[in-house]
Image 1 (cartoon, rainbow, N blue to C red):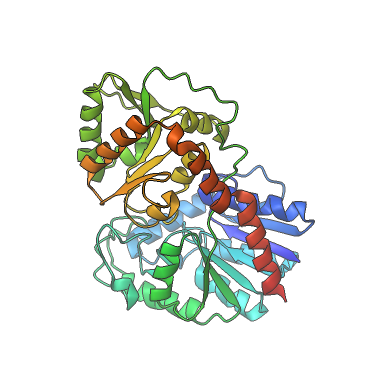
Image 2 (cartoon, one colour):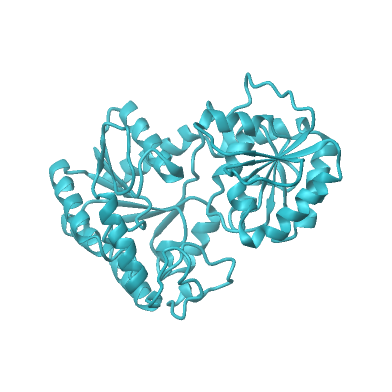
Length: 396
């Protein structure tokens, strides 16, 4: 067996780390493998970059002008094809194929011609639509029968002049509908259900959850010396425009409690509130695991998550999660009240009520269940084993 993984990035970001984890598992099983990627840098010896950052920027500009994302990048894709010809993989695993680095028509045509068994992991909804990566917030269901008049052309991947969502949807359908020896892997059953409702219906579609490194994301040997009850959040979500009311409400509510403070990771913004502590830069997974472990509750204000990696990481560190009942997030938290709580989308008043409920019961009431849920469902080794078993089944 020889495996080629293809992704926008390698050993950074959520999908890049997953590729690296799968590659490590393949190496441990003496299976030759390569990772081909388009953006940034990688320290892995078996990772090969197929594009330049300048070329990616040129394709971003083309998308913004003409709107046909993932149908440019001819030069990088031809380079990738040459690498594949040299490596001669027996399995190709596509991950995040958007990102301005790949021409999907050119690549899929080559893979069909070579009759190479194919795995495609859906890390978001982009493959199902004519434009966007998520559509839940705008309550759009055009993707089921064909897009057009897209309400999100100004969202990633940004198209400023033309709405090509209808023609892009038809082109994607033509490309992926024509595949035979392919399995589509979804990172949550929520996403699998959407795939089954899309033009992919009738294809081989299954769920393999993303995996967490439970050796890194663990509360073992981490001292919790907080003087106050700590609410932890990711600043990127808390500071989004759509969450402005929610974050203001939660901060004001915390100000009225002498023994509560909020830690926000990933911002240098200065808050007037004395109850907010900001952590501008996290250098490693080990460091962020310490913050998860020291926190009493992790509050995820995301409205669109295909999996919910940060929530799973928090659970792995024994920290209960409070989130919205949106997309895949309830699937990660599990039964309401066991490892945390999910409330009606945008109902930040109930978010606060659940925070106080956890404060009153105490983190220790949830920690063991949180850890057990991740070990049973989202452990990295289990994910890698399932993926390798899938490779072996496809090769037969």
